[in-house]
Length: 419
Length: 173
Image 1: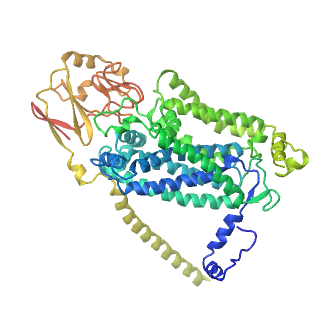
Image 2: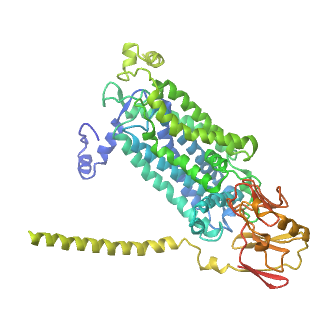
Image 3: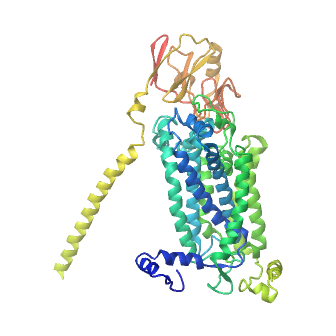
């Protein structure tokens, strides 16, 4: 992993490091050669780590006051909001923290899509990242059930019923998930248990994600392989840590804005009504970060078909490194792909919008068009554009655009300004 | 040479036997871990409910809770029964005669699970294009017999196991 041997200065440090090389690991993380041209889109890894730790810390605190029982859960959440010292703050951080976590992860994923970070030799980093994303969705869904409001209950009912679409064994699986004949107290209990477990699974995967990242090193906005360490790299600390810290600060300001000024804007008011198994709310919507997938589910007029398509929309991302046939990583040098990338961004945003609207009329049409494009993008556009596209010339190194005038003028100018 | 071959065979047998016993052991431990999530005895004990239906007027319905799910009990008028029976089976996505959804001689009583067969929401009564129920979640329309007519739900609303204890009481489950 590290290019040069590290020896602790102090005798005690050396004694310890010979037995458990934690200090070597620390030195590796500090000196880790990082491409010097990383832009602010690369700061979301650090931001996501912050989000995970925030959720774990606030979650552990909330669990000290929450009661996972169908008769008591709703009241215990209100107890946290009204009676527990700073309970309102901790809960609002936790609930808005989930949204901020997804906001950051979506930017992180689209960063990867734009700069081709999922391509060889970084496929495993990408796949571990998607596993983290799947676990995040599971954790968020189960967490949303815990307050046992109307949206909790009916969201849980609709999502668990997705499994009833499986032929033959579907109903048995659904009953097994519930531990009852409907979403009920056993369901709430197990969701709480799993909601507590999943963040620690994510933490483990984050370690693997970073480990896998440190094998080939970071991709970068130019998307070329670089020599490490070299003129093209800077040590992770202090150069990247200070940049990450600044981005984190800006992120935290936005986060605090939600927590203190509009803590409920991302939630649904129906969840302040206690769960009632006899009445379904007029308009069920999932949390905003699941809306594009919800739109895909509803765009298909067949139950099993809708469920299959929705899961495919996520699982297709796992084979993305092999669907993209282009040798060039960064979309900066891919004039055609770059346009399709932005169409995909708009497509996913549109799917999110229609997912929040009733599934009828123009919204249904838009959902279907959006769903078709989503799959076309990955199955047709990515392989075909990779073959046909004439890419722009790629610089030999990160420093080259500065020294030679460069293939990408905007990039050269940016670096010149600093000089 | 033959001696060596024999040794290898004996070891293969031991490996296979060990793996088999190991797999059975692992299975024996995993099954309780999986089955503990199925409905327990307390849940199963809630499996029957008796309902007094004497106060329901013709054309009206009540909703009762059975196994955590709503049961619609509707006393249909003769016009509603006639309407349900006039429907051609070809018009139904999940063809089923109205006669098969009620108890013989008690044709006015429709007892069904008030759960949309799409994704489990509770449909609203007296709504939709077919004079029956309408599910607000994803827009499934059911007729006066609880049969799916339009929308994403794949099947008719389910008829639970039930019986008339006497003329005023039914037992569900």
